[in-house]
Image 1 (cartoon, rainbow, N blue to C red):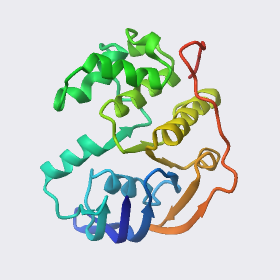
Image 2 (image 1 turned 90 degrees about the vertical axis):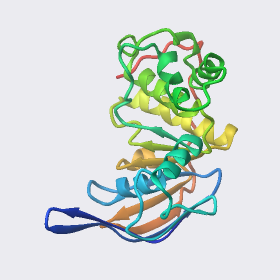
Image 3 (image 1 turned 180 degrees about the vertical axis):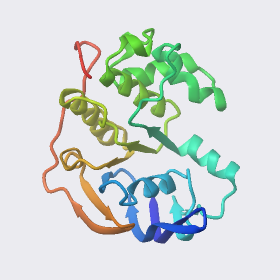
Image 4 (image 1 turned 45 degrees about the vertical axis):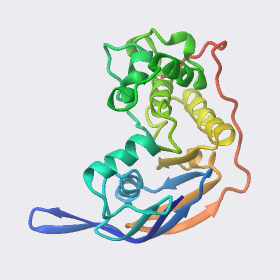
Length: 241
């Protein structure tokens, strides 16, 4: 599904060129749950941006479902992001004046918004928050806000869920709720889940860890015994950071 061949990325910083990626080779198959791990400055965020079609390589090739991405126009890249990729960010990025349901419906405003209410409630149900659909972000815990963020990413039925430090702002209990939901979406719905993280304990819940350092893949190994966490449901009372 995702194939990167000798991908480099160079940024122009004033009069200097800064190499963020130095020949990345990796492939991620459909239905995998993979962590891309590395310290700050390793290049993992740049890999995420390229996989998510938020940026394009300076050189090398990126194929998404067999389609060459590097030469696509901005409109075509936006179309791929809109149709195939759901994004989950560390900082939730919810609009504070909107309810959880309205936040989840936002992606539908930019495309096919047919049956938005049903689709948004189904997405909230997948993350165990259907009963809190009319709550605003300030009325939700940090873990619940991140679950709304996941529902928003799911509402257009993407084939890839790209998560950037999804537990970075959460306590350990809320973090496990998020991991459980990602595992369930991968296992039950067949969504390809990519977790970008610097935390080994979070990466250990995936099925494969790709380690990046100095703009290169330095290790790529399966997780021998990934732990399974049960996802929260609407019937459970949850609290979090």
